[in-house]
Image (cartoon, rainbow, N blue to C red):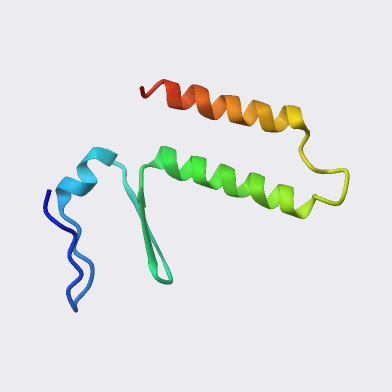
Length: 85
């Protein structure tokens, strides 16, 4: 596989690196990071970030998700991953 290069003009990513992600690849740039992912991965990352924000925000109040909510989310992720194996 050809290497990803970083010349002075910018980042060069070969198509062979992106092809396994499928046709609808999203690319996001944050400060010093480039995130290249499929829509499914993006949705999972957003869902996880939302759950973490909810846990951090409500850790001292009674609004935190219950153990059953967390278990249900974990099981849904495991089931979705099992489809790809």
